[in-house]
Length: 210
Length: 425
Image (cartoon, rainbow over all chains, first blue to last red; front, side, top):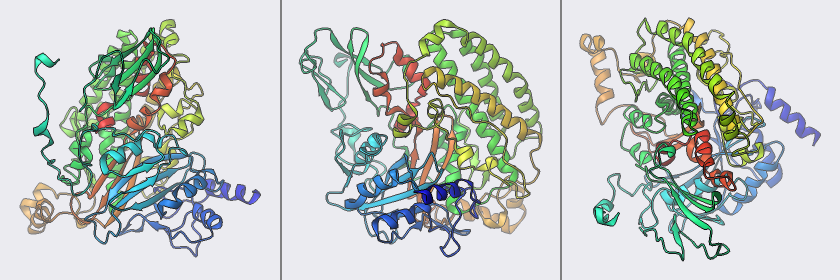
């Protein structure tokens, strides 16, 4: 554990990476690992799970790979990995900053359809990590992380509402922005921006129904 | 949609049937619909309160009344068009949303802003923060019955609107940023007007503080109400002043610096802007209120440093990057300028962003405001997600309000500063 404590101090006071302003600040990237695909949490994950995690930068632009590192996790491993990321001293991702989903239906070279994306942040170590969990039709479902971060509650409901991805074990998985009778999941790529004519079927309320 | 039934057997609350009988069949339990049209909800929020006399036994927030599909709209509007939609998310500080939206795209493209652009964006962002906090503090006081400070603070807010109108042409919905730059440069007199504002704002603040912070009624309405512990704040993903009032040390301006909060932002060794992050351990409505007031002071201090030396030079990225529209003189005077303009405005041309994803976040007045943008190489976003601080800060509301009196609802709502347009998007 003493070794862990040392590495934490390194992260906090380390020299900023080449881009400086990105998602992970003050992390010293080892010389033998390419920039944009290394993160202190990855080492901890690989030690714990005994396999490689193949981190990749979210985007490679003209200035090179960005410092936003992402890992892919299979749905059946998600809870175990997330709980480890929250509790381990080298990771300490105590804040679930964002939870969203991307429908990769028409995305170039998109293999899987729904990518549930978790933006993890640490209030202590001041670093971030992105975790993606891919699921597919017909019954897209990932385990709910509400047991790890309570803040996932409404964000998971929103993903269910907008994408139709179920969260197994969610305490109260209802639609949040749309109403229960709404048939589709509008942020899916095959839902047209104009809608499917739901407006036409709305009941018009007159003064007598008030 | 199922209608609400008001029979004694139960009521449908946000899809759940709540039965008074199941709840111990207490005859004095009753259900109150708070909103969606209550003035203290500021916009359209609906709370279903289950009451025992005036004590709140349970609360079910029901949101979605203002849902307008903002995230879907990003898939049909291009990057610069969509900035007008971001204005309408948190309409109390539209300029901050603009910064966040284009900041995320600039991260994706890998655009480095010019020093002048960074300074102006930082000033505008801090003005927006002051604007937002002034409304939040003023309206919270108004909801609790203190009318005068509300008017004092709104007068200053009006001056910020004038300042933003002067540079962007729009009073309320500024849409001031563009990809890799700004709508246009500031006019030479603008820094003087900002200085005039900086001179008068501290007076207004101390006037309002004198009216509120020594007011026994006001303090007793806020102290100990809606307490959040630091552990709970992190667990509920609460960010911004609401988290800092609970003792969470997290401000993206310090932790993940951007614009002028970054070391060496002008490429010539300038240090980050000097300011302090106010943190309180109170964790209640009063703590959030005090933190916001202090943040206004710190923002004034930030602007003070920046407005004195706005670096010269262009505000847009260099012309050879083909990111910003060229000058009109260049468009009408040279064939290169004309083609450049044409390439950008034609629907089937435009930018060619790298295929990938980026998450850009700024410290907005209410917390971490981030955009997760996905690009498939086209001129519109493939998917854009707003990380709405209002939605995420509002999740804990039912837990906060349980056990309080009904009149505390407005105090807690006001201190969390829930903006329904951002909440529902």
